[in-house]
Image (tube, rainbow, N blue to C red):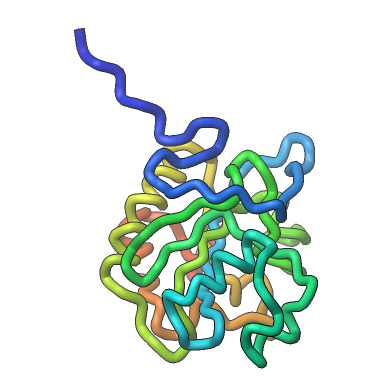
Length: 193
């Protein structure tokens, strides 16, 4: 008898991610499915990595007095489903069954509020630098798991769903990697549903 492969997700939590329970989430609208993956880039402060400040932000524990750049973040309540560190470490903050607060004011396919029907993946990075090979390795495995477990139709950058407001994951992000890893369209590529 063949051993059963453990499920990749249990109650929306990915078994290969370090679980960190953010308080910044709420239920998805009734009947909403994960049809979109949104890729982000984040660093706090900008261009600084491994500081722990992103984790603190998503956990609602960021000290706005810790750095001059954080003053505008005072009281901000944001999260993402996943964060991939520069070393490839994968953390999960919100169950994929819940709505994380990662996209803000956004739209795609004529639909507003992309948080309702998406999973957010933050990569530790910034617009000025390339992402690390270890991050792409973790991202590829995570994308495969999400595609296997959810009815995803497309992958977009934050800049695609909030143009003019956001620029991430930035000009150094390797969209060819995503194409090779998933065979799903990036929203900027025609034809698109």
